[in-house]
Image 1 (cartoon, rainbow, N blue to C red):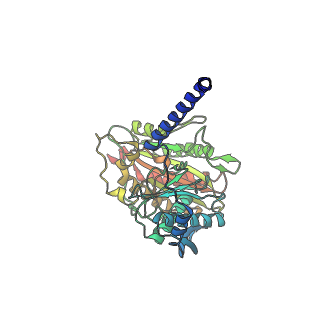
Image 2: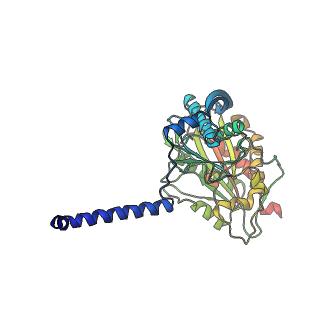
Image 3: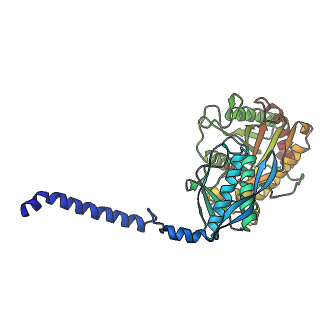
Length: 406
């Protein structure tokens, strides 16, 4: 027996050491939240909990063909608030799929509202926002989700959307903050004030930075047989020529050139160092209707409460996520006036311009000065030509040069 123990002694010690190592690793993982042990629920408990469920009629809201539609469906209703949110959002996703608003099967992974009482976290298996859709379409999808949850549950806590338990990565909208309960599209931030102007600074001509969305690594959306980045750059060059030719006091700068790659927040840092007076970002997407659609946006996270915040002082250190607060009031007025000028242009019959909307637009993140993001829907890749004149005239009408100021 002793001989047998000596023969297998290394294996015994190795086995014991492996058990100790695994036990220590599990203990460390559990106490540092690397692994989370969920409470076990046996069949009897599941049967007991199912006795509290019932069927209930709920209203599901979606946007289709530029109109808000409501459909009443029946779902399984449980007593727990998280399960209720889970059931409602899953029913909303199912309706989106049935109406061909989303092209893939998406489900709700988790709903969490217990650990953080002031917000609900909803995690999807994939993003419910179509990749090549316009910003307006994406905002309407978000608004329909918020309205569906809010109206059926009388829920006043904000919502944050996740994909695979991480914030949604979208090229057009920043999802790092909670969604506003009021939504984006239905919120009216400012009234039109056509008398508002931008005045140039005292010691240098007025500087406008034009940012054509896309770069060498990001082709953007597909428009017929070309990419968005080429159309935005060509449009920006033509707009630059128009502005400079009609106002010699302007200094118009493009954020990129052909073949150049732009790092995240690089353009924002350039605009802030340049101390630009106006920042204009432009993007295009393809639509089916032949009439051009123009949608101006400015940056906000919360369309109502952000206007209550005190803007940072000139000597304060401001994180990039709060840079928009430096000029929020002026930016909102400028965006509203910009839409007003477009709507009253001589060529307004050739396009549709919507009211300025505040949203967390990725292209405007980190900008301290007055910043505007304009998204243009076209049916043909040559339609950008018809936008140069009205957009250039709208900007010029809101810009007062140093000479006129004096």
